[in-house]
Amino acid sequence: MKAIYHDFLIVGGGPAGIQAGILLQNKNLDYLILERTNAVGAHWNNYPRHRSLISINKRFTGSDNAEFNLRHDWNSLLTTSPFQKPFTEYTDELYPSADVLLKYLKDVVVSHNLNIKYDTEVSFIRKTNGLFQVTSGQTVYECKYLLLGMGGKPWFPNIPGIDLPEIETYENVSLDKKLFENKRVLILGKGNSAFECGEYLANTASILHFVSPRQIQFAWNTHYVGDLRAVRNNLLDMYQLKSQHAILNGSITNIDYDPSCEKGRFKVDFAFSLTPEDPVNTIYYDNIIACTGFKYVDINMFDPDTVPVQIDARPALRGKFPKVNADWQYSGVENMYAIGAPMQTVNFRKNAGGFIHGFRYSIKTLVDLIAEKSFGIPYPSTKLSQYNISDLAEYMSSRMNTCSSIYQMYNELCDVIKYDKATGNFTYYKDYPLGLLSKKFKAEEILTFTFNFGCRGGEDAFTYVLEATPESPEKSIFIHPVIRSYDSSFGIKEELHLLENLESTWDDEELHLQPLRAMLRRSFKMHAVITEQRKEKVS
Ligand SMILES: Cc1cc2nc3c(=O)[nH]c(=O)nc-3n(C[C@H](O)[C@H](O)[C@H](O)COP(=O)(O)OP(=O)(O)OC[C@H]3O[C@@H](n4cnc5c(N)ncnc54)[C@H](O)[C@@H]3O)c2cc1C
Image (cartoon, rainbow, N blue to C red):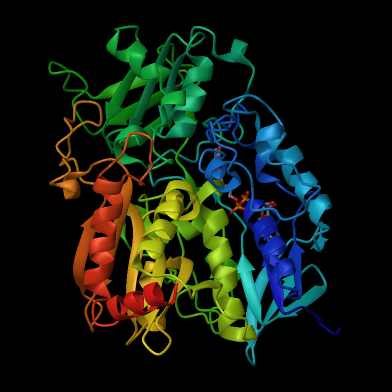
């Protein structure tokens, strides 16, 4: 049977696949989305298990700038249809139900008339003569560019007894609270899903213990949206206010099951001392719920001879993610790209890359990069032809005060300002991957602008005392703009931090614009000052 060809195949009709479809369609590129189920957004049918999202839906910002408002609307995709409302108009809940997101995703597909084939589960992927063959049932699809947005599957650590069928998991734990009344419950994991289950059972179970080897990471401390969010962390109060529920740091060495045991069906051995006087390290529980995370690569889907997918070996990723390059291409597999949740590995736990409000921008940049490399469509840029240094500083300041893309994808995507000696013009590129700068802008004179957080040196976010002053803006701790110039081997030549600002606006003449203009003059001094004088004369 002849394969069905499209230039792009997108596997998975989740937020990532939908976002990629919109962006490819806008460029008139030929694509098809293959979705396993009979509708988009299948992930959100069951997740989050207790339905409330952890993405904020902040409807009021005091601004009517659509780009600025996206900074605080974490659920909308980058839509382009005039018939599509932003997500913020779907509900006034700050943490909406996943049902609302499902409705939104379905509407986006209709309003953009996306090309999707449902009930099409991809089971095998190989590559011949530069084309991917993607198998679903009896049908083979073929493409030059393959975007994989299949989301994750539950992942379990290697603990003897973890596969006992009596252990419930995050995806199938019963929502019938009665089953947990007065029970001793152990929750494996200390992330958002673990605490979501705990919160649901806090007024039902007699004892809830959370255990994992790692200490809890708080999102307010790490700035990583995937770490424990305040909206999920009621149980911490109950622990420290001595109300039976508790958080344990350490490993489990074994789980046994005996339904006749009166102390509890599960006998759990821990590898650490539970109390100073307890040498046994064993506790009995009535229920165990495993909330141990997700894995974002299934090596068995790929023909190892033609599609040699590698696993990212960094210890923090625990074998759960594919290895991808700075342009999200699978390492060693040309033209096969990760979209959606696994894009976060490029700058793991450092920005919003694993969430809708982050990867909507990574996917836009990815589509722009492929369109440039393979379809001769130049990476989007703006020629600032009549701009002198002061105009450029104003332009950058306005971008600092409104843009959402590099605000969410801080220290991974950047704006690039290129100076063209021949014409005396500046060209402005938005949302370019920092990791690809030296490739595209080799031998060019550029500056970059990123957003960054400063380092508190391990201190708690709420005990930290502000140190930055107008004289020492580099001590800024909260998110702030950083402008960099580079030497010929792309080492950082100069780095300017603009002083952190309570309302995230950087347009103060003395604190922001003067230092910015001074840096622009220093960096482009050989050429731009002359150009500036020339332009001033003309005007
Ligand atoms: C419990 C939980 C809560 C979360 N809450 C939030 C949140 O509040 N906000 C947020 O931004 N992010 C949240 N996330 C992260 C979330 O996973 C992503 O934002 C989002 O789901 C990722 O989108 P995606 O398109 O990459 O993957 P998914 O949404 O998982 O979509 C993958 C799609 O691919 C399809 N598919 C899978 N395999 C195949 C195949 N072989 N062939 C064809 N189709 C296939 C699936 O049916 C599905 O439709 C949460 C994650 C979890 C686990």
